[in-house]
Image (cartoon, rainbow, N blue to C red):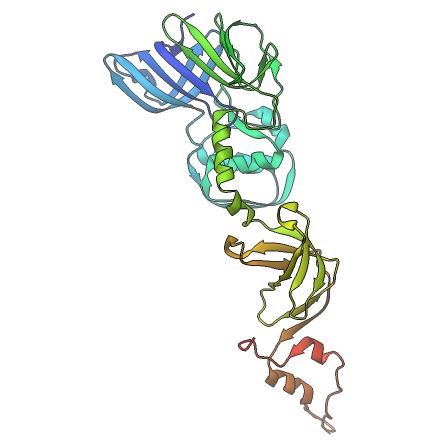
Length: 367
């Protein structure tokens, strides 16, 4: 069965389909001018299987057209602007991402994106990163299908392929098998070949053979394919930065005379035996708050610095009392003010029993 690209016979080729992200390919075509690929869109076909992608690099050399391809429309590395959403579905958020970068959603994904989110900020950055944020929200992954569509899935089904090909080699130490399909390279990420659940697939061919090197799931919770492993290593390298960039809900144990709090975080990553003398940041210079023990605050680290823990009130914080700095002059004026009336000047104001608890004599510039 000949393998073609836009109807032209290919000499050699290879397609790499990862567990997550877009597939990539390299093909050599019997074409002297490359005009068949002028649009940039390429369909590589063998038997009943086809990959639809876009040329990222291409040139003619010695009567052959050599091209690098990526699944889809090559828009996932495009930078999309920041965008804020209120009461939107994840489907709307993904649709906007793909519209802004020129890609198209796989309709089978829509059922996985029906959830509403009360708030969502799409940060400025590459479209693939915006998609990954949504994938993390649904607890799943995204990839580009052979049809060139962006698929957002919560889990693979690992359905068996129609024809069971001949197994030529197997390496349990690397969790790989090599198969020789007769005509149709059905094996791809998310299907099963016999008892093997496939997570990545390399399909390679030349003038005489077609082979697939398949990486199967090893049964652990660790990343399975090379791209995911590299991403996991990068995440670990930045684990400290990520740890100190997060906010952590905490229970208030007590409050000191200086206003600082003793906290017991929910997350054991920062819990230890609790945190003491953590300053409370209110965003109002001179404002003082008495926080009720047992209520909730959010712990954070200023400038992601482990030496600078601080906390802020949350919606679940309970306060017993608060005071605002209004200055000594204003305090005195409120305590002694009189004003004219039809019967003469008013008398001194009544002593307010709460005045000292809501007003401070310290100027905000002195605090």
